[in-house]
Length: 211
Ligand SMILES: N[C@@H](CC(=O)c1ccccc1NC=O)C(=O)O
Ligand SMILES: [Zn+2]
Ligand SMILES: [Zn+2]
View (cartoon, rainbow, N blue to C red):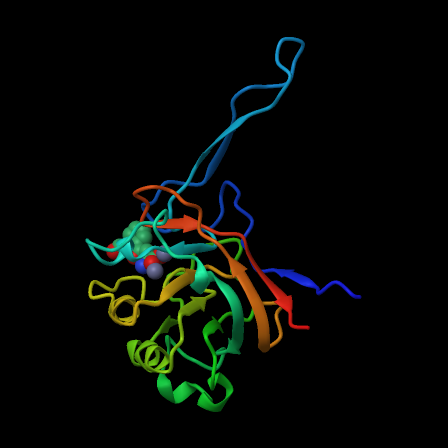
């Protein structure tokens, strides 16, 4: 019996990683140090809830939405389609998509980057048009993921794609690293941490090849 290959699609969390302008910088600080008096190392992590690869909780885009701790997990585990949307400019629109390839999909992860921008923040990432979200919701999709920092454009005040997600009670993953993933179907596992009151949570996102 061969083990199914695991593909890690998570960003490495490190000081200096690309971060939403104005949000707290990621930091890990060593607290206790192993020494003659102390048997262990311990640490403290500081980060924005939208840093790195993360799951938005409904609370992020709706005042009465559930937080990360109360989020049901079923959307975050199961079969998904990785869809190559590198042809899109500024936003992935309904016209950019070969809809046949998404037939029957429950989870859809959009790849928009050729190479993931590890070194610097990129303000002009490709959003996902709200019509695409609406159509995926109508089709029964439960989770939408993207390799960019947000489904909506960086300067959006209306958050149309996020609100379309809310209307269909779907879940969102952002900041996925899909540059080394071939288009196709996989098993996804990307669980938010149960942080009480949190509007989003980091996830360790992986894909497994299907049997
Ligand atoms: N939409 C982004 C986050 C976002 O919009 C944001 C994150 C941090 C600070 C400000 C943000 N938006 C401000 O208008 C996301 O869902 O991750
Ligand atoms: Zn987010
Ligand atoms: Zn978001």
